[in-house]
Image (tube, rainbow, N blue to C red; front, side, top):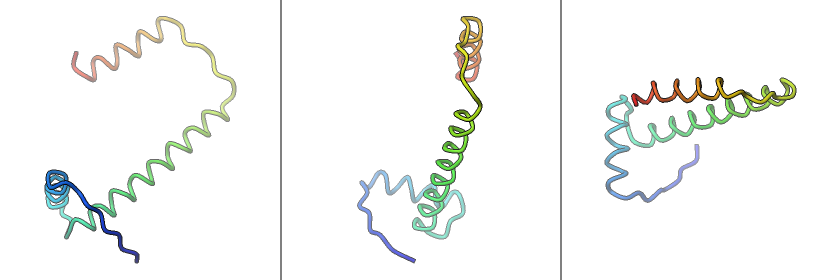
Length: 80
């Protein structure tokens, strides 16, 4: 296993340490390693979804009602 050294502002280090402890990690390094693994996994998922979208064929433009429905859904999720 390789090791890196990272300098973080005290406020960021405090937050990372708090999250590591809250989530049951034995130390900050284990927590950061897990977060990086999750980022890599999500990146792979996004790439797969992008490829799926490209391979699904040509796109069709949305009409005004569809766009408004999306806006309303987002507003309701945000609570406005």
